[in-house]
Length: 342
Image 1 (cartoon, rainbow, N blue to C red):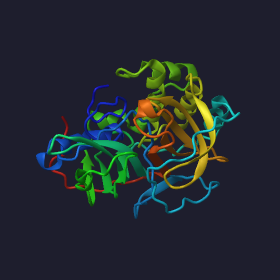
Image 2: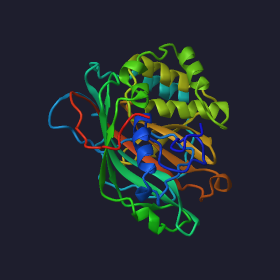
Image 3: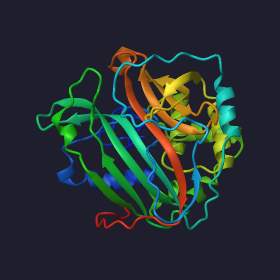
């Protein structure tokens, strides 16, 4: 993929990886000259959005949480050197198989919205006014509402958090230009319908067919296995895959070569879980599951090859947490004249 907002390839020039619906809204912002000095530029990480829950005052009909897991600690994840992953005796097939068996469903109605609240930290590259390139860690809290059938406008709330230093780089002044809270309207266009719950229900429920689907997704210059693992994250990020398809997704993910298990990793909320991941671009890209519930907790990226990743070994260069997903009857109405369909 060569989309400038896409997460898959390293040389994309604009924002951190989010859902297709969110990308459509962000792309409109990127065409506004007043908002272009800071240009977040994601590395090839595949992470789920996640974060603290902000329940709507009305209309919440169902909630997916991980009650058996420890409550999140109010910590801010920063870049630093953490313990390197220790490959577990547990297999990816075992962990992802348990995750597949643990899936639940929101049972959304077509007229409802999927709501995901998020906290994320990703690498961003900046090209300053002096044309020099710098790097930092871009942090946000996010809440997104997506129409279940893709026919209703959704909404995205982004709270810009204090940036963190990328290992070995000072925080550039441009990193502080994005601040405050921003609302975007997500119009009911093709980019919204693509990730709609009703559309995701059409994905394969057979693991072998799901595997073929993952390997058939566009992957740019990435090797097939890297592309397939990226596709797993893409299907889980800021949306809700129905239980039968999610079960097939986890079972198919277990067959991707190079996927191993680390039994003790932390998400962005400070919860300890089981990391299932593989290495790409010198970074181990992990999806984190609860140690007892096997519910999805979040993701992280940790450097394992300094030369390839251009950061010290053990550096935490990406981290997210997903704390709650809800079915909501309504989405906030956002006054966003710039929003529209391409």
